[in-house]
Length: 447
Image 1: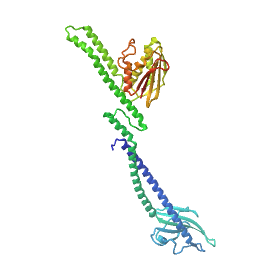
Image 2 (image 1 turned 30 degrees about the vertical axis):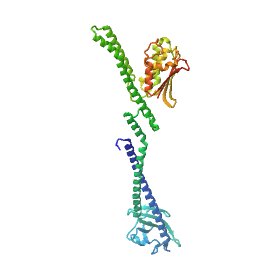
Image 3 (image 1 turned 180 degrees about the vertical axis):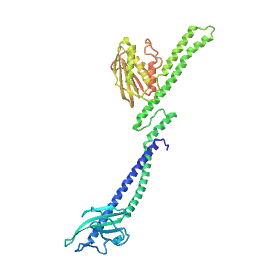
């Protein structure tokens, strides 16, 4: 796995989060277990305090008397870890268990009768103190503090065993979770690997576009990449066509010039005429080859703004016809296409509509249009109130050099360029008699 890959970064991030979580969980669980063990010890020591209380007797003089043997045998074994003490008036030691030979413990000075206090002493022992006010049958009253202590080793050993077991299980669980995370990352990032593999196939020529069943989040990316690929192919195809057309168009003027140079007398007018003709051909082919304008790898184009600019320009060109433009265009129509392509398509269609109309041209834009089984990002409709084009001639005028009416000025190139551009971009161009104005209507579907 490469260090710069998304999988590695996500796996390391998840591993750090898991490590921090398990470390925090270990501390919390360990402290919780320690509190639970201390509570259990406290309850155990309470039982021992009550056993000392039950065994104690107060004489008529008020002195406390303890039996030589107690129910708990550990009180009788020196160093057993369980020790008992009884203090009078919170300071005088009046009794200690045989196990507590040589030991002493200081009772808390502010403990009131009937209350417990559980502490960890400086000798690493847990001590439970219980204060009691004792009054015998003759009315003598004394205050005593019963104390039972036990070595903290019992709790420490339990906590240590729990810590060891907890860390082993958390480590095993962390490794399992990291493995599961790795599997989930590979599964989650599989759509990215698929799209990368398809891009490599396109680069090697095994595919023409991204046609896989991609995740929802990648559909927009795939669509933009397909639009970019189609645009680049259209750009390359236009350059190839332009170069082929340029070479073919220059053959005749070059032949005439060659004949002039091979003859004994050079016709200067003919040479000038052919040079001017060649200049026109080169200029036209260069403009057509550069129809894309500025090259952009990403970005959106506002088709509505382009239509408005074209409308303003055509209004000046056909000023004498006083054309009325019926616009059904949204405020903004953002789509992923090159601006030059849209100018070429919309400009030629609207120019033809203005050329053939009587006085009205209708332009409309519809976004996210569906036709048949395909979804298109935009539908551009241009209609005029002119005479229209006979149905049998629709296919002919889409060919290079064919015009609907030879008496109308033109070269028969505009519609061919539109047809080629729409086709290269993966769109659909349809022409028919208009429903509203009765003239020619062109529908341009762009993916």
